[in-house]
Image 1 (cartoon, one colour):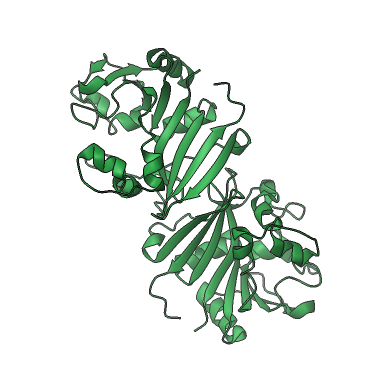
Image 2 (cartoon, rainbow over the protein chains, first blue to last red; image 1 turned 90 degrees about the vertical axis):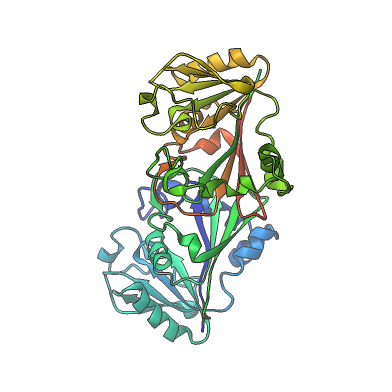
Length: 217
Length: 217
């Protein structure tokens, strides 16, 4: 059975996966791009953006697991667009004509619309359904490949809460945001169902891996 | 000038330094002793409690910095006793006749009482005063030695907020408590004044060190 995976999802030291004041001009609110600086500095990211250089250490080793073996992505309304995107009929996500998913991509949202076929293999499908139902649709599309859970915070929390995730790579960035959406809220005792590992990087971030115990996959 | 230090202060992955439901029978509430298991497993702790064995790795290296060079401790009402301890005239803290501080120990509390001299060099002094005022009293008592900030959560947060701490060793334990007192609340942007380092231990905890920039000491 294919696995349900999370990669490169970054939170602040105080647990916020996004800041306050999200808008078209500020996708992460007052957090800005600070949570993801570790990723922009990797060799993997530079390759994707056509820049030379980048770190080739542990940050890179984790970051580049984003793509291999993934056959579908699931994201929430909060990742797909700014608050109110559903009132914009032309909104096709943040990523331009060729989004970095290159697979069927399922968006869990109350505001459904017809599927949108983008360049490079990404097709956006909009589903108003439970996490388990969206996962079933994504599994079908992914074949024997894995499914990536992309976020935002609320969607990831819902999937963790339902124990639908097999492997999660969470990155803790050493900044304090104080405001926004907290990842860990309502997940008391998660460690009973997930084995955790912690790996500090010289860049200052800490990589956490959560691996579900008793995986059937 | 002597330094103001924090050692072995442990929080959950979601930032709680203590649980919910604190009482005489449950000093850390529903968290129980889970936050501090990493410490009980160190060679340092075993030496203190007269047990053989214990881990001698990175957890031990951090843990045993608790005592050397410390001339006074500051703690809050929330560390000294259970909620309501001030109504018990015989309360002398959790630690029995010979507390593990062995120095003058200043308790910041609205409920002052006469100083209590314990065995082994610990004397409890009770002050209803601001963090800076309590620190001034502790500095005087410590001479040229350092001052340890012992907690609880609120006191540590107040001292961090006032930038009165030079060096903090915070341990993140990979459990989710969901309820209790959060350390990082209200400390947005702390990283601008503190350099952080993160060190993962094979035991599963992560050691964070916060070192104040532009120290005068």
